[in-house]
Image 1: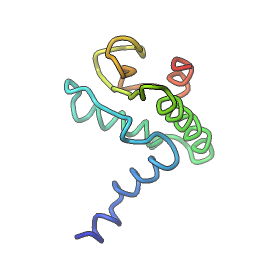
Image 2 (image 1 turned 90 degrees about the vertical axis):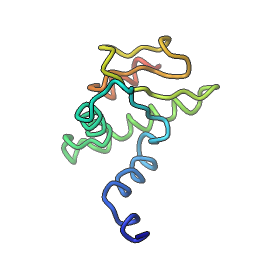
Image 3 (image 1 turned 120 degrees about the vertical axis):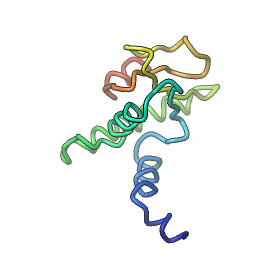
Image 4 (image 1 turned 90 degrees about the horizontal axis):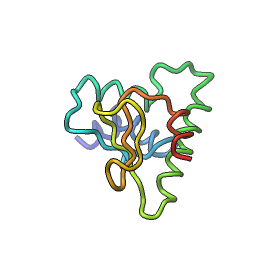
Length: 112
């Protein structure tokens, strides 16, 4: 069973995401989101629809967002939701509310 978990694609993608871009422990999803909306958001976070030659820069932007979140005191998190159309900083203490369909570069600029 452990071998199956260690070699699973989901585990490998989450581990790569933790090391190379945005740590999954900083990500939350609103309870009002549907499963398809969550899948769409995860697809954006994992750069599923980004061409290979653009992925390095894409993941660097996500890593920058990760660093912005963890260097704040107290630490901040991202809450993806279907209830906002633009990122919001003050709606929920400790969280940036982010629409589930987003551009990482736009989010980074908003957070700075």
